[in-house]
Image (cartoon, chains in turn brown, orange):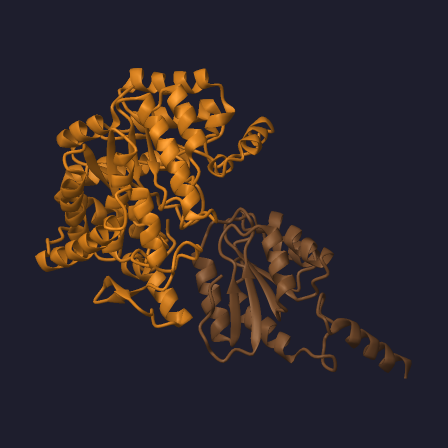
Amino acid sequence: MKPGVPNTPSRKALLTTVSSDSHSWNLIFMELFLAERGFEVTNLGPCCPTELTVTQSQETTYDVIVISSINGHGVIEAPDILNALRHAGVTTPVAVGGKLDTSSDLETGDKLAQAGFDGVFPDTSSTLFDDFNIFLDRLEACHPSTCLGCTGCANAAAASTSAMGVAAE
Amino acid sequence: MIDFNAYVTRTSGKHGPLVQPRMGVGPLEDMRDGLMATATANPATVCTITLDSFTRVCAFDKAAAALASGAHLNGFPIMAYPREAVRELVSEIASATGRPVQVRHGSALPSKVFQRMAEIGMTATEGGPVSYCLPYSRLPLEQAVDDWRQGARALAEASDISHIESFAGCMMGQMADPALLVALSVLEALFLKQCGVSSVSVSYAQGISPTQDRAALRALDVLTSHYLDGHPFHIVAYVFMGLFPNTMIGFCRITEDLLSIAQSENVARVIVKTPVENRRIPTVAENVASLNFSHHSMAQNTMPEHPFDNREFEAVLARADLLIEQTLRKDPDVGRALLAAFADGILDVPYCLHTSNRSRARTAIMDGRYAPAQSDGGSTDALLAALKFNQSQYDVQPSGFI
């Protein structure tokens, strides 16, 4: 919806949230955070319908999709967005972060990782922004010859083929 | 039914600013307990029924289903109950305690809820076509203006004591130029007057400087009196709506700063927060404790005093008046004038991502006050420091001993 800070961006990020979350400041902050790390950011804004996240990610090729949510419904609604994206054939890595449940349950992160997210950054972790930075750096490093086999990564298939090749030798 | 504006004006004349919580629960009995606890907490309270977020987005079937399943709703599902049951609830509070009840809802499309209020015989609510659309909804502003017009008219036609408070003093919770908040509050009040609403209130949320807030509250009073031209109104102030202090001492200090200037200025009603605000929805007991703390603080007269700064007042007044004037010049119909002013960027809410808002405006912190800016410094460190400004001002280390 709004362009990020111009920083001769070479990478594109889609920033979105779950449909019930009307908060804005987390999205405003994350837009700036991603722009500072060289991303051109499409910020879809609060209360984003899942269909809009899907159609936007089909229209433009993004390097990463970031779901930021702080109303406590992330653990309920974010997996539905991921499923809708994968069902629509979008293979872009998807990260989810913020205040993702109503009870600060330490297992929420694991639940979301099991749901298939490529990166999960709950506010219960004191290192979430460091972890998120590492996640973003790894995205940049990721191409077929170095892919670590991240879920959903377009290079994963090639990487696993080459890994099998290595194993066969 | 009790005339909300008359009650607030009369009672605040006697006790000083009245205190009001945000409070809403699903079960009717629990809602009654919350209203009763608020009404009997101290002589200066006003009661609130906050609606749940399904009702806010007109998902009335989901609200009813959640209520039936026993799930915890984050507010009162007014449409899920028979009219008679809600009418009895409000009448009971009125006859037992003499206190009025305001419905708070957060809806960009309130006409169905207002229609129901009218059928029940309830007369007082809040919000506004801009203040409940731009920050929280994806609906085009035009649609919100149309539905608000329809809803406000329905409420006004049903009663000659209808009252709606503009929520525009709280746009985005923080980082807004006080002059913009004042201007939007006056403009929404004019919109509501045009819809035929009997009396209105205009709002202003605490920022980061008590001196600037005092100046803004004075400007709000002067401009509302001028533009409403004799239409009955009162002023409501909100304890800070942004990233809230984390500690008990932080809660006490920030609340007392607002109460102190509310007493000094012409504020009739204050919406208070609780120390748990950052973490969860407060319980009834926590809300009551906060209402009593606030009432007690004002009665004791031991709060810090903040001087009136005439230069600051003149500055806020001039900026706000210009915004109002430029907007009203667009169209004699205030709803259409608001749409045109947002389309032209005369009105622009800083940081608001809504597509009907230009979002070119930014806010800077200069000398401990909010100031309109073209850029905010543009770094996450600067933005975070600005958002956490009140935490750093009011929380005293060691933190977290609440």
